[in-house]
Image 1: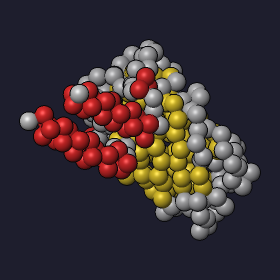
Image 2: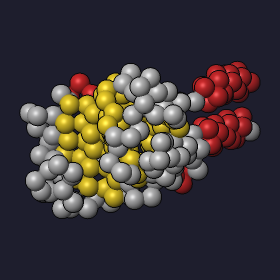
Image 3: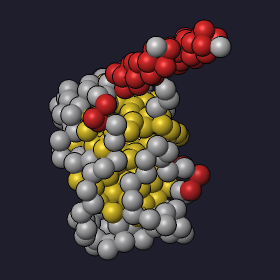
Length: 227
């Protein structure tokens, strides 16, 4: 009886933790990373001196966001060449459709929840690049519509990766890259660019952490009754 109670409690804990992540048990391959950054430059019509974000952008605004991807997404090779590159690399892992959802804020400008259709992750590129492209729809800023948000990490030594597999529970370490950029592209050619300051896994939600001590207490109680 006590074993059955404890087993049911562990099962309930698993379900509650997955629900707190917004996932179902059958979607356990989904992983969420969160990121922060700072605007370093703005070009085009979306620039506003002293802008707060929704009314236009200026250097110094803070970025925060997160994205959820499927670690089981299939690998496609060769990938299309990244923008600004001379051609595709056979040593690059390309995972189209791997991004399932994302959102971000730059100052007062919020992307809102995105389903991330057409978004992708690229890994490797001769061991040097981790790139996330997130196609988005959102509110216009000074007449420009957002089209693409990109995180682009590059290591000039080409040693950041030894595999083209997708990272899973732990994202790439920013210390491995000497270029850590993000970009928000708008229609009409306007761009907001900045440096990426952090890239970390989303921690276990506080609700789940509060639940775990109660679960452990239930296990101790069952053990005492049994003995």
